[in-house]
Length: 97
Image (cartoon, rainbow, N blue to C red):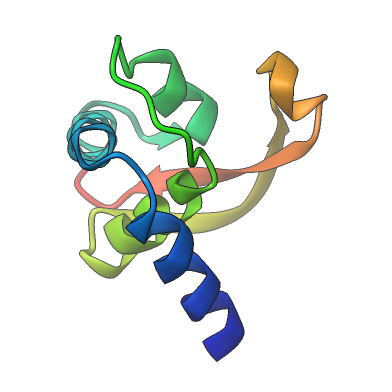
């Protein structure tokens, strides 16, 4: 587990701080308004801010789970983002609703 946490910390540290703040805002908004969502839903609502380290999204989702905002489910969805090539992505559940 430490290797995963070290990896998540490293990719998060290299992500654009403005992007991280906006992504956290979107995660919190989705958790307040939707029972279930994926990172595709977060990406879709991110607006104009970007990062060169998109892998940091996983770290932000883990942080939101640690904050008690969301919970991982056993469910998976197929990503619709072209750069993800149809890979499976976790379905998250709001802990706020």
